[in-house]
Image (cartoon, rainbow, N blue to C red; front, side, top):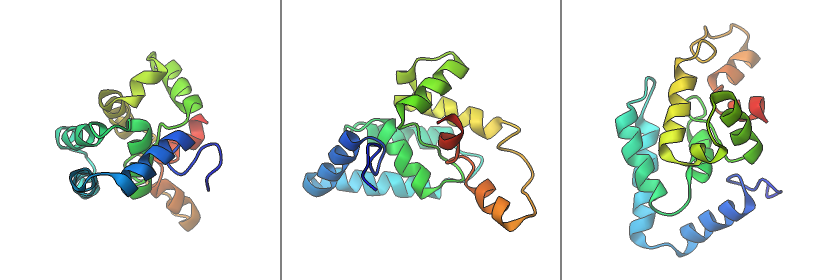
Length: 148
């Protein structure tokens, strides 16, 4: 729903994104669709160079990784996380010795994904129980909950 965290993180970011979808140019819409489709085709292990190109295309449209990370976590929750909540960025920054704003940029987001995907937590064996497996499959997206 649209509470203080909005559909894509922050209500301002959500509103900006919706305005871009409603009023953006055909080229902006093509960039969003092409980039999101290209990112959705990526699988583990991620080709970070291909991902970086697409993320830069998206960020050049205006919204930061706060917005795009949330959208990616919805598209492929097994690979991508959201860093839209300030509390999450602050906690991750404190843990990793980086500023909160570092993760709003493509390089910070890619660094975080690299750490997530190389961690024993992420690379753990899939659980046998069905309900645990459903959560495990989306574990990257649930990082938001862990740090929140």
